Length: 107
Image (tube, rainbow, N blue to C red; front, top):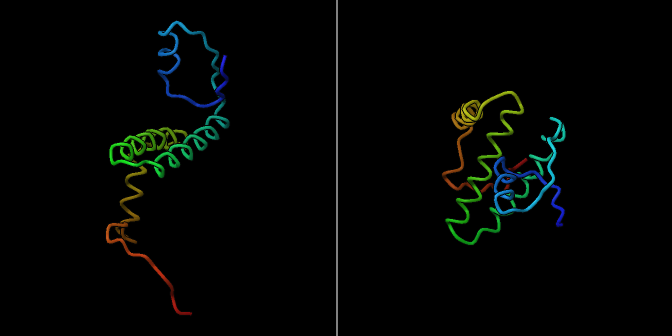
C-alpha cells in the first residue's frame, strides 16, 4: 500500500473508496492543518511555476486560490477580507500590471 502523508481535498477519500480501495486518513489538529496547508501551497506554487500551458497555469492558480480560501478561514477571516486587503494595498501601492522592474535606487 503506497504511503502519501499529505493533505488532500475533502472528497479524495470518497473517490478512492469508490474505486474499491482501502485507505487510512486522520483529521489534523489546527496547528498541523495550518502547517500542511502551507506545505500544499508551496507545492501548488511550484506546480504553477512549472506549468507549460495557459490552461495548466490556470488549473494551478485555481488550486492556489482554493488553498487561500482555507488559509483565510483558519486565520479567522474570509477570502473576501483578503480581497479587501489586496484592494487597499493596490490603491496605496499599486498592483503589478505595468510590469515595472526596479533595477536600482541611488543612495
